[in-house]
Length: 105
Image (cartoon, rainbow, N blue to C red):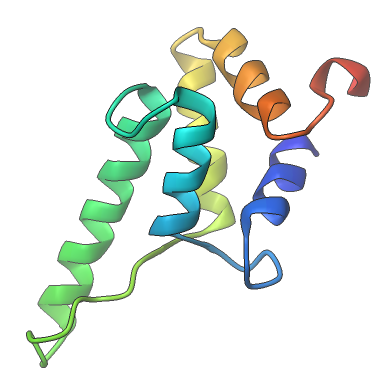
């Protein structure tokens, strides 16, 4: 529920996806800057893979492919954090974005 709440809050297209800019805003809010943290590394890898996939599928190489993070991608980023034992990082990220994770219990 908390992951969905934050995703919806960040998304400018009714919760369908997150743009690179929206994810960057989240990362700056949670990490203080771009370029650090597990969520940054995971999100960057997803965007890179999607951009490579789209550019290889595209016939017009002059335009940058539009890549977005899906809700499933979003879940995966946080699942990876949890799998690495960083539950405290997940709680912090969600709470700094306005979700009351500790109250959901």
